[in-house]
Image (tube, rainbow, N blue to C red; front, side, top):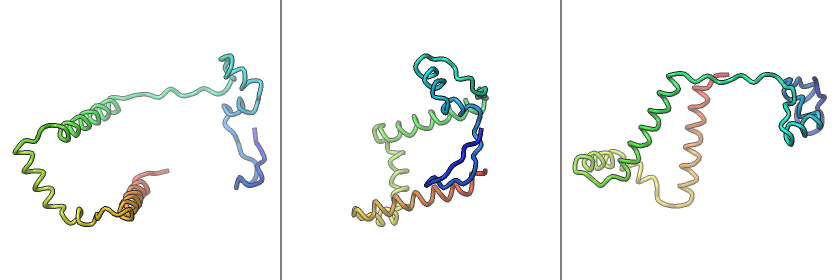
Length: 126
């Protein structure tokens, strides 16, 4: 199915649709699918597969989150306190850049957005 687009959408010419999208243009089939649970006769939807690596990454993420929460909420210990003081001394200049003004929050938000956007641009492929 091809639909001619025009107007303010920015697309010019016919646009090819996935066979599953036909159910949205057939009002009767769409109403039957939503209200009565009848399938619209669209294409097959592929079932995602979960591998061992996916489970391992998920478990490592949960373990990292638990470790970070413990480090943030646990009572202070002398060994960890020394590490925190050393890290604080190493990044004192970074703390001095933040004065507490609203403009600082905007600057750090934009800086983080630009850095993440740059990382995504370098690592994501089409």
